[in-house]
Amino acid sequence: MAPGRINIRHLMDMDGDAEPVAPAAGVAEDMLEAPGDAKTKEDRLVVSPMAPSPRMSTLSPRSVRSITSKDTSSVPAIQTRTSFIEQGALFQGLQPRSNSKKKRRLSAREKLMSSARPLVQVARELNDQDGLGAMVNQLPGGNCCARTFLNFAEYMDSLQEPDRKGILPWLVNSTGFNMFIFLVVLANTALTIYEADLLITTRSVDTLHWLSIAELIFSVTYVLEFLLKLWVHRLYYFWCPEWKWNIFDALLAILSILSAVNSLLESVSQANMSFLRSFRFIKVSRILRGLRVISFVRQLRLMVSSIVGCSMALFWSCLVLLIVEIVFSILFVQLVTSHVVENPDTLETELLLLKFPSVTGTMVSLFAATTGGIDWMETLDLLNPVGHFARYAFLFYIAFFTIAVFNILTGIFVEKALHLSDQADRAVEFMKQEKEDAQDLRQICNRIDRDGNGKIAWPEFESYMQYSGDGFARLKACGLDVHDVHEFFVSLTNGSPAEYVDIEDFIHHAMRLRGSATSIQVKSVATQMMRYQEEVQNALMWKVDSLAHQLRKLLLARKESTA
Image 1 (cartoon, rainbow, N blue to C red):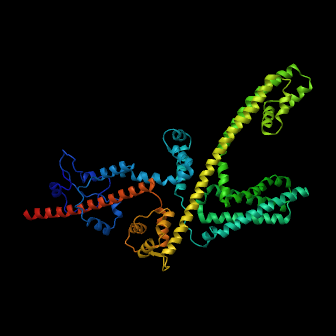
Image 2: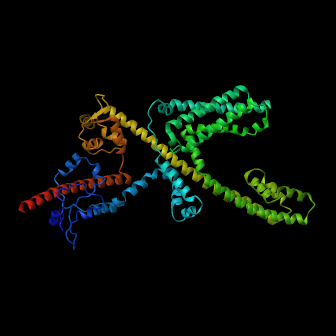
């Protein structure tokens, strides 16, 4: 059956008062047929009344008229909606539109997985009917806990940055506020150092009254800062990219409150002071406040991130060192034990037992001999009475540990740290280059904008590119290789017929046009084109449905007139 052929018998059997509606998604194979499809069954109705399509419901009547009013004679045939989308999906590596809701749901969780992937994975495994989920469901209340955990994960996924409007968000995000907190942290650190020196000098554990007042002021400042940021960012404060530092700030605020309460109880209550002083470890949190300086300096944050990123490499390095120490310690303990049994009461035996008293004591002695704690030559001289094998084994241990183990583990650790620092440096360099290019583009825009109205008109841009002499070179230095001036200007206006573009929009769009297109950008454009083609196809099918409705009325009227 050729595309566009209408089953007349089916039309005459239908109710003539039915209104045409938009075609539904996923059922277009019952409405249109691709050319060349051989059908052995009876011809079916091309267009039938169906439920409105969700995408067609978003189209305004004006957009539908503008789409359907264009000449469609150049379109050779309309493919089925399912086959059209499937072909585009196979070409772009996507899935058919029938799974669009599932796709949208999964893409909405990608933000959560990027920041807390284990949380989402555990939530899915707990709600799965196989594996870990089946084990959890067998426990009392396990199914309820799994659903609650999944709901919590979905709620955290839905968290977004609230609108920052008003004077309070401006104050919290201002440079002056951050500088004030930075100075407070420095002052608190200096005061903590002074207090520690004063206490060791006076041989006292009681804090002076003015120091307690200053500590209370610092604690109130930290708590107010935390509450202000929590009020501005809401729960997103614990879910943003800086969530680790924010949790650290929250922990310091809680410890500050506990420290202030403890100091107040000590000053008021004179009874049971030993019990109150047992909580003085809370005051150690004041030392941690000095670490907040790291959060204000980008380079310090990068260094700390590199150190934390090397934690696993450090763990495995320590484990290798421990294994090597255990093996050699057992060997030397056995050799020394044989010598002590044969020579129990000698001065050499007592010295050997001081260096090799047990496996753990021998591990400490061997580690000190290789790390500079003691001179390894002294230990070698002590092993002279034990025998030549013990001496050679100790020399092999020193050579193996110093040349092989230490150098290899240090190289692995340093390589990991350099790799992490390179990634951080590249990110910082990229952001720095972005700012420099944006500033250069702003200077170029100020030169183009002759009348100073903050907008760049097409004549101004064309004149600058033709007569400035260095317009192309300046744009190329910013990463913009312009070949067609008019096409470049039109791309900055998003294809609209506007004759001018704001400077901010010019900079924003120009920054996106720098360099060659990435795979993500090509994928995004291809996906948008598929959506536009789908909207056009839906509009055309809606128009065909309307024409079929009119034709059905004419046929029914003709049938009634002949009757």
